Image 1 (cartoon, rainbow, N blue to C red):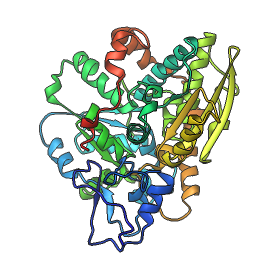
Image 2 (cartoon, rainbow, N blue to C red; image 1 turned 90 degrees about the vertical axis):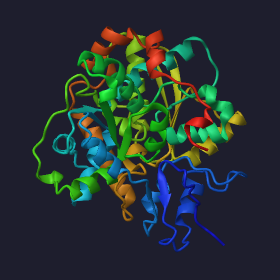
Image 3 (cartoon, one colour; image 1 turned 30 degrees about the vertical axis):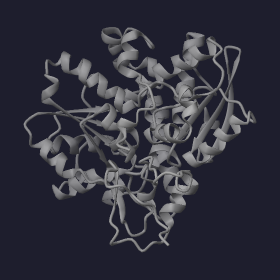
Image 4 (cartoon, rainbow, N blue to C red; image 1 turned 120 degrees about the vertical axis):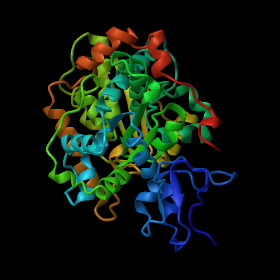
Length: 427
């Protein structure tokens, strides 16, 4: 009997080498219990593209769909190459070069991307700050309008696909915000290109990601290519580039930085913490401090974290979920009216993006590794002068010049979306 997951040849994120597979069943166990997908459908085996199976497969017969050949072609195309780098990628790529987990390699990563042909290198924490601005405003709007039921985060494409496939009745509870990468892509195409007088047809946009599901998401929103940390490390080694030996460089202006809140998007609980900082700012017209600025009760690796926080007389009831398998448990309780929350963050991968399906494979002491990656992002947040999205000068500039205000018609056009479209996922 076949114990392992089946992967469609049409899968945009994951491939299976059957010749390497010894039918150990580890992948199906992870997909069943952690991800909550395997065994929960009467249809042909579905996949949410999270890549959790690729991280733990001992034979490496499951892996991300390698697109480094496409990357090489793009880099030699003569077009303008624009990279954006996700928060979690910077604290893991060093592991592929023999470094300890949790070393922030942002500056060296920028240098590496310039060396292989990047013309502009942007930080996806800018896109995360955009997400905070829109999502916090959306949450406050729901509370003001007394809309019942929780608002779910929408920045994890694997979770969004999980909800679309298994719980479509809750699609109206998903934040309409696109993911940070997709928001940043929209600004690249609708603002950066115009400011720099570059035709969009002459831009190739590439994201460096910790997540295999971003390969699926790009079919829907762009960019042109999503390259995982593992893929990028392979490419750099093929080009004889040792990232450890490079000097630090800075991200390019316009989307050169994000707030500390944008940076911790790479961890489980980070989205919640960042959104609550901005909710506080919206409701109180001043910057948060204390418990709101450092919302530590939503941090950590617990599968389901519950918290409440009082802002301007309203108590926000919150859940932070590590893994879509646990999201299934919470959703079933919500259906039975056993629990109630105002805001629920869901990440398909345990620990959030820091343990995404495109990150370096590590089979031992995984919780210790996740903590080191998480702490690297939290420590960077703590040191930053700008810790709230609305204090980011680049964010202020884009709203002033293009978007107007959060939830404006222009913001909704470029930064928000709808759900339920099977055509985006090739299933």
